[in-house]
Length: 176
Image (tube, rainbow, N blue to C red; front, side, top):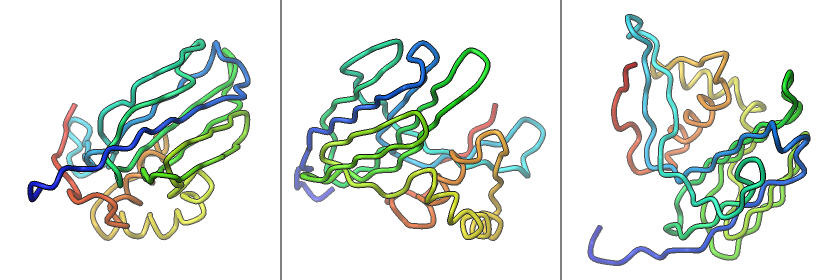
């Protein structure tokens, strides 16, 4: 950077309306880079993922239900959550957001609601799957793979790369 300090903004993201808090898992990260993972002995497969630092969990109820932290303005945040029972997932949410002072996101998907303060929505599960054919074509042209088990994670990473949302496109290749 050129000596100009970054502007930091307080971000709060609350996840609620879970089907069952006991069987709920959430995570929110400030995206720093896109990494590519290849399975052992299958270097031709290149799965892109978003990597970054976790937001601070400010409220816990069986799992983290509220994240609150100071984040540089313009940063990308990736949140995901699953809720259900011991045998089945009933609801999930995947959100890609940009830190923007004064922004607000209110999102409802399946059995999960999300309210974000000082953020704006870039994409959710529906949007990324609506444009999946375009993202798959971009991935194929650039030599990336999409896993059936982690499809939404891969598509979100491809969206970040395709849209040039980060200054660093790909940092490294990870291997198991």
